[in-house]
Length: 174
Image (cartoon, rainbow, N blue to C red; front, side, top):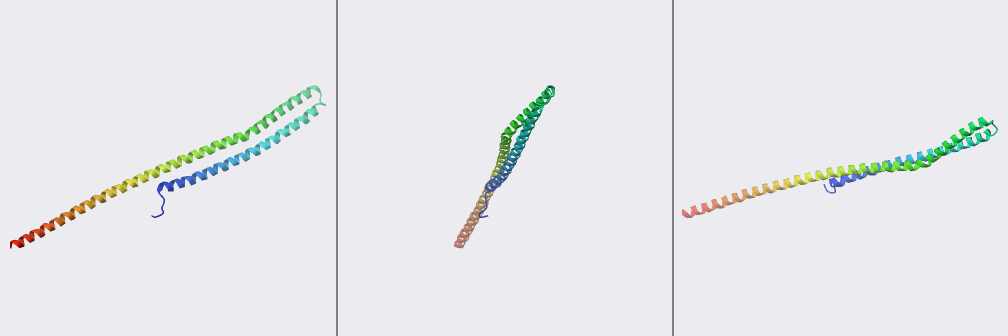
């Protein structure tokens, strides 16, 4: 297993890749939203300009009308210009709102990626702990077995020496 990565390294690499991908997606979505808001703002401003222009024309036309009708037209013109003004104002505010929501979305994505990374690193740590414990256990077992084998070997050699001494002494006695 030469050159293989540690579990945590592998996991963090995967998490980083995931995070990169989700951040890229969030950025792309934010860019799309910004473009849409820019387009909407332009359209709204154009519509407002057209409304104001129409109102101007209507008020110019109203000058030739009788007083009651002129008043009615002027009121309608005032309403139209007010609406146009509010539309233009809203259009000005829209990009700021879009940027704010995009920032919020990005923050959410990053936070969830961080959580996922933490989860995976926790899992990796747990796996490493388990592996280390198993290794320790195996080493302990091996040491135990080695001791037992050594004991048996020393006992066998002792019995051999005892036997050889006994045969020597018995041969002397003869």
